[in-house]
Length: 541
Image (cartoon, rainbow, N blue to C red; front, side, top):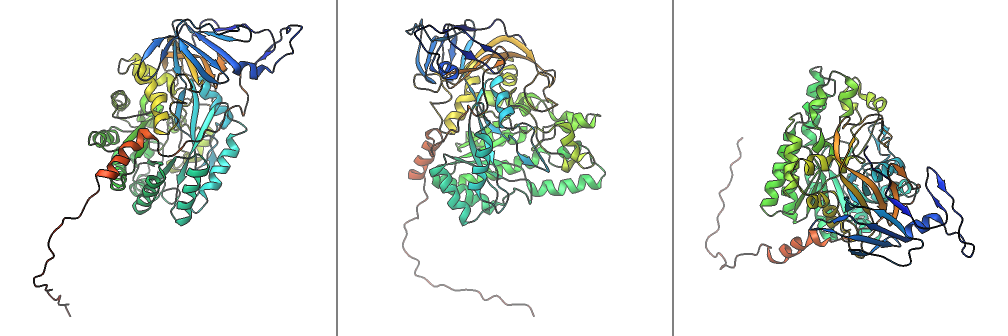
């Protein structure tokens, strides 16, 4: 990894610690030592970089105090100099920290648990330039949504190295579920709920339940999310493949071709539109599904599509690799597509706002865990990596390729997520009053992605060998430099849970307006007063 020289200039004269080494300098005789982490959070100056937001770029310094951006402008010289941490960003970009909208840390799934927990996963995230994740609390059918939320939060709070929030899944429907959704929105800071249209008999809900859940989301001011695949067709397709003797990873894609993703995407959009509920389609994996979303947006429907690092950076030809372990490592749901032009197609739509935001669906299982399905592809735990590599993959495939500019990159990796989930402008922007979640990005540096050097707990990386232009050289979380030049300065539990208020304006302005002016009204007409007759139906004997 080409990191260049260290960017930090230490101006203070007392203790500063990292988790790799400690630097002990004598404090002035008349001043007591201050807590090192508190000091690092107090005052920070980022000098000489180009500040890039979604709407503009400007060469400016950024001054941070107590975790919040205080000034953005040229030639800042905050006083006093004592106690000031300075980062030199000359010839670099200064961008909002990435927001990964879709992760599954330490997720119990398909007979195993994902390798990355909230510590290793968020530590890897900050190494890649991501300063916030949104994970999923997923209850089993018949179980409490609130208990699932509390469980996931209890796992995350002691471990997270960056800020996080939680979506909650609706895996069944009842009056209790509706009441718990209301409690989660009003008391727990949840403003998004995910419904599965796949994983039959595990998480899948039917169309009637979708309609009810969408209606509740709209009433509460939440964003409805869907995993869009036709679960019934997948179940039948899996039986067919196994009966044909296809037991390897290729069967995973063959039993859930992109048509089942496109059909479910269209159905979800239709149901959401009937309710006038905003819809967010997670992990868009295929051309067909992406076209459905693009067409819906051009028709004015309030729908957002989330391609992920995997669908933008690799493809499903790997399922036919002769090495079973290699092929199985790419198994995820929905699957990667064997058409090698799919990543470029999705990136083009992302660049032009047909698709809106990027996540990773980071859910890592090592080769031994994947081997649970060595004789039956339906038992291979679904999931791939991405939380550490998302930013670099999107820069490489989007910006370096010429498909998008630096401002659109910020939009799809951070700002749009902040707007959709009502975190903006505290997150997703570098401006006075925003949280100091900031990345110094070197667009000219390169790195080669490899499982040997990544910080995730997994022993395989689906982007192995990819050379990426665009490298995060320093990551700042809430005003503290938590990663710089390959070294971490963060401990488990430093991240915070972030509540998200309902009715995000970016999403709900159009919804509310349509609710006021687009309601059907009855036709006024004179009552019918003529003869009414019925033709008797004769039953056959």
